[in-house]
Amino acid sequence: MKRKVPIGVTIALIVASIACMAFGIYRGEPDTVLAKAINICMECIGLG
Image 1: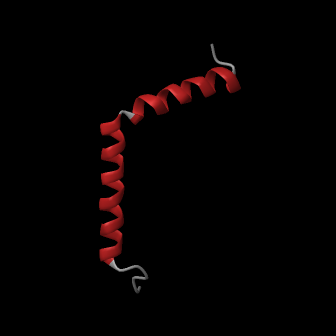
Image 2: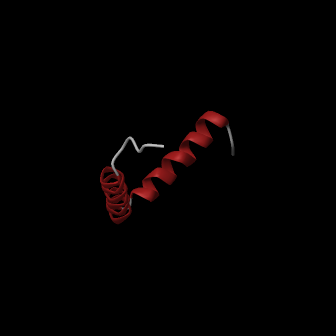
């Protein structure tokens, strides 16, 4: 089977994704995402 996307493009996208995740973790974004997820559960689903 022939590869449609060159391996270099795949590797570059993986590296860029990891860099973006690391930057978000450095900025403290997981806390923000968790707070928003908790609010959605409390308001929409009615937990609590």
